[in-house]
Length: 537
Image (cartoon, rainbow, N blue to C red; front, side, top):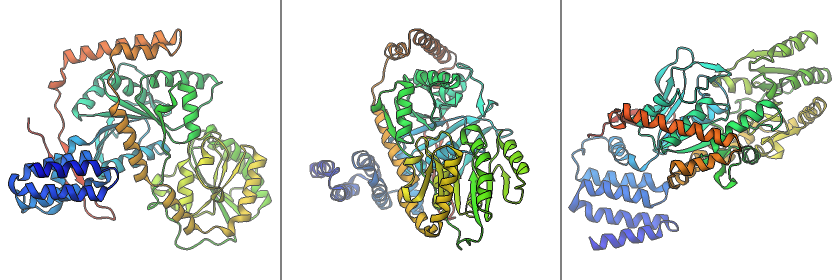
């Protein structure tokens, strides 16, 4: 036993610098004692090893534990995947249990929805438990399971305005508390400053003592009435947030200025793209006709008014250019009127809303992708287009200049004449663009697994933060303004009293915990096998 302890100590000391050496030493320690102590020791050692060594070694340690289990375990007859899944289930307490919250999720389409989905899938692959909370969409209500065992709560609230639920402040507390306790959540991750459900959940979670992380996906101004109101709401929410994430450095500067959050609490983690889904066409398109693709919500913020002026001018200059416009919104009427006015029905194709599964088929039918956003923290659509091999023309706004290298994108000011000039430049360099080379570069530049690993680091830092009392938290809200600070304190005191009342009416111990579902997922169309595990009380 003494020898094994020394081996484990050496493994721990060498872990940060000599990963493989420390792993070999740990395996020797396991094999020394598994023959004498048995399965319990193997699982315990796997837990210790996983917590001490770097995260990338966890799958090797699971394999070591499986070897030990197969030697002296009643599950010898079980297939290897079952043993591995059993060890993962036993080690579940070493992983995070994350609640993703936003008003914006599937079946709605957009960058935030894609971000939450892909990040959740990659976190599930890393062994974490992930649950998504959003509002009901039409008849889609209740609990649903998505690919990889991703559990989604579609709570029975209807959207009030622009897919946002009506702000109730305290009305959502009972059901949010129940979900947090039933799923044994350890950390809450909210997305998008527009989302009222996100703000309310983060507020209630902090009242209950949970660590919270917030991701800001958009940029906001400082002068108009709507931005002033939103910035004050964001200041209230982020006053007590544990950590924050932004998708670009420009977005980080914007968030810090708007919320007053200390910069050291804000991390920059860019979005990514599923390059396996967005591949170039097998055959390169001809150059007799140049197709420019636009896929965006047709709203003011996305520059729909710019398109109304740019498209007719480009069509006048280049008779062989055709536009494909995918998306829907209040500005679609203006585009339809422009098409009628300039008789461009045969050169401007309006597709309407495009499901995310069909985006690639639209992109690969074009040569150039056009983004006309007036404000953008980070544009996932640009990544998807570049992954499909399209040259991008975009407005130089927000975090867009950070997205792609200069030779993969042509930037322009959000002005019609400058946009037309950028499109002319893109058409001239189009013969030098190789779609497959662009796709291969995107595979190296952006990866959702990398985003998940970096987000995991933020979670670890958030959970290491010390717990704070109500008085310490109220002092933060007081700094939000002479009058607003006092109002925020009153809101949080009432929230705290409601929480204590809920604890009295329905104690946490009376809320049944749901069983965990451990899934082993196979890519490339292989089957998904499930193992259900219920902890015995």
